[in-house]
Image 1: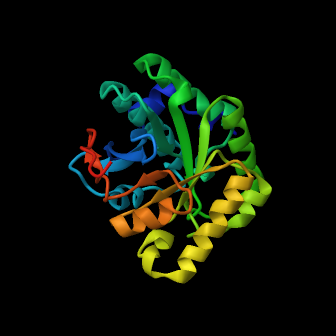
Image 2: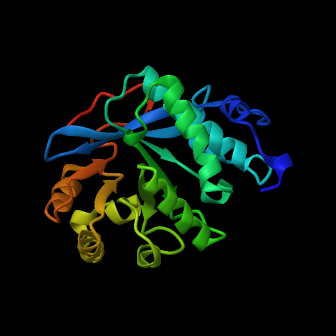
Length: 249
């Protein structure tokens, strides 16, 4: 990366260069076997509770890197403030990461500054974002795992690569997209697909998270496949700058 494009960590933390401010909401990922919160996902929101889509719609090639770095800082800072004891899951933009080693420094410095353990951080990237350089993404994931962070593919089953991603490299976690989850108890095709994905992930020693669970019927169907980790409105909606009260655990 060209030196004049390097943005100091302090500037990243302040979101320098962004023409808007934002914050985070948290939504729990629960383990229904242990009856515990496995992680809290940090979800982008506007400071006046604008939706994630409203904020993400302001991202372009000029501010993508600064936004990605500011997201990490804000998520870690708020997680420490809320005294989160579980993992926190932070979404990152693969196309914004120029150099894994350089870009991770901001996260590590934030964790040290605010007193949040780096071994409780998960980095998610969404399958729905078309990755410009798959080899570069593999390098990012491998480096993050080497540094002790967990990694996850979000929205699995909705995007551009599907099982090709897992054939090329493996993350620690896979989050099944809600399009596969919705009404799965009533849909034979979705049940067959999800069971197949769960088997592949088991063979590759990857944990599966079912996201977007909204009904008891969906939950028990997914549990019958051996899934233990869940996220969705059935348990809790995202809570703006706070931790949600969990239901049905």
